Image 1 (cartoon, helix red, strand yellow):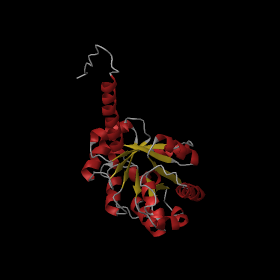
Image 2 (cartoon, rainbow, N blue to C red):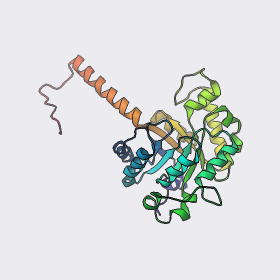
Image 3 (cartoon, rainbow, N blue to C red):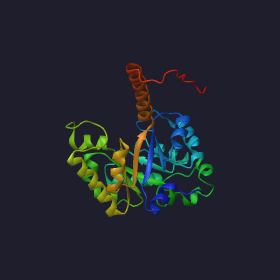
Image 4 (cartoon, rainbow, N blue to C red):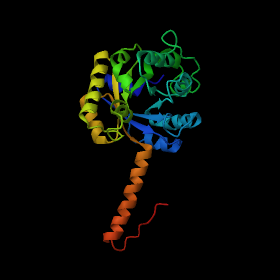
Length: 272
């Protein structure tokens, strides 16, 4: 069986850089997987992606060697087990609010006797190796998202859940959960109370011997998060990259046309 590349990075003392997919398209998944990320996560919670779309995206990413993960729709055994059977190296589960929730999550990710995952790794046997069933419990990653006031109140119990590999922070929901609408929604928090909350989660994860992941809106913030001690940082999703690149391209054409700052006689020959 192939081994989980994220675990190798951690064993070497590094942090994993994670991409994010919300568009249900194997070609865009293939492009992102070849961009140099250590892992790429398919978002089946908020992304426009169903099971069939997810399966094709996992297949498209295989050749790159990137570690594919899936954010599940919810704390739902069916969606979690199907994502793993399809060949995901890990699951990021939203809205885990208590130790009981975390225990349920772990049980859906691990085979008996450590959990209750049903055995049927339809694609994982081919994508991740014929010995998948023997080693999956030690290779597949189980992340619980911390994104509510309730989860923060139960943080110390959640991070000590046996079988949990890490916690993952969604700053937008966590800010809403802790402060309501006092602040803008979004990533890259700078409010002192939110920075304190993120650092508290990092410290709690460290104390429990598990990993910490953070969703980021910019490369600069992701680099800061690695400096704080985050083990996995998500930066750039397919939607934002496409939108920003398109906007920048159009804006540049308009700027050049307005200022006349163009090369005289340029043909702009196409490669097509």
